[in-house]
Image 1: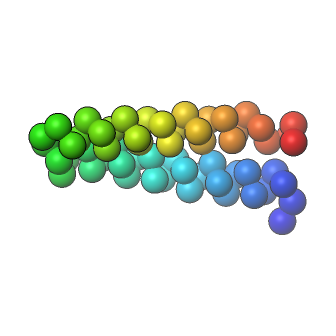
Image 2: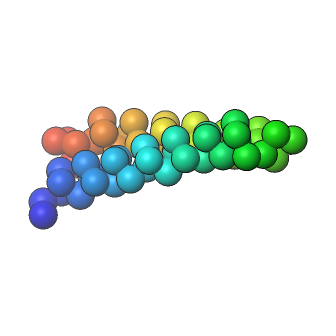
Length: 58
């Protein structure tokens, strides 16, 4: 596996985890903890976006 493949897998895994955290915040935790799960999920998606932008440049 080269660098781009590793970044692609990391991006894919981070998207799955980010969507899972947002889903937990929406459906499982209806109180204030849901806001935290949603914020962390959005952070994971933003980090995955950066990893995707790094493909081919590293």
